[in-house]
Image: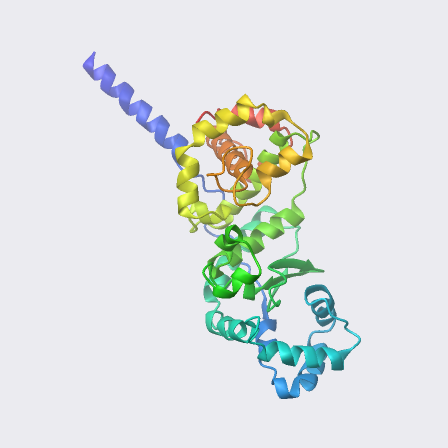
Length: 336
């Protein structure tokens, strides 16, 4: 009897370990993609303020099309007035009131070497190419935005305002963002933000219903995929939390789920309910003022993670295409 009990415990341990083991969706000999990163930020900040008009004209020559978009779309200025823009830009390069001059110097310091970003993007887009070979790989333009933009798209380009990634404690951010928004304003989040933006732009919402459940699981699938593209990043960084916020979610996971179910929010379609769970903010108002924002995405990710651990025959591509949120929830056996 004792021997049988020991065998049963061993088998149970094997089952538990197999359920908890992280799946690997990619072969070791995956085709390597080299992502092209354009250092528009360096070209911009190398301009001599005393010769701004000459420098700006050269940028229009070197970056045809993109320069118009940058001046109008990012800076909100008139592209036809190159002389006026040159004067404004010369002032921008030397401004100390809003901290632009100091910020530009900090950009040049922190982003002198971007090997870490290049490595993460190469790996992430190599994995995307393996999953979706029909998708085009974008060029990445690094730029300074005057605190106007973090991530945006233009044709086959993803632009990144690196002045929005100088560290959560960067003093000039107090003038332009709320405290809760500073969490991800760090260089280490750039690759993840680019990949997440790309996923959002290229993998559509497929569910026929429009309940909170569908949106939670769709956003959870996006983060689950992002986790596979960033295998060396801690989970809290993948979703854009601090470790303290992640720990809070894990500690209160059962209570969070019970509250969602007790309020029957999972099956509601009201836009205000859905956005309160999914949109960024200082907290998730439907749950607790102690909670982080976007808690619905975190719960959706946990459900998807449980679903994929319990259904090992499901591929990443099949997961992303599957719009049956009710089936996924039931087959996830999610019970915190």
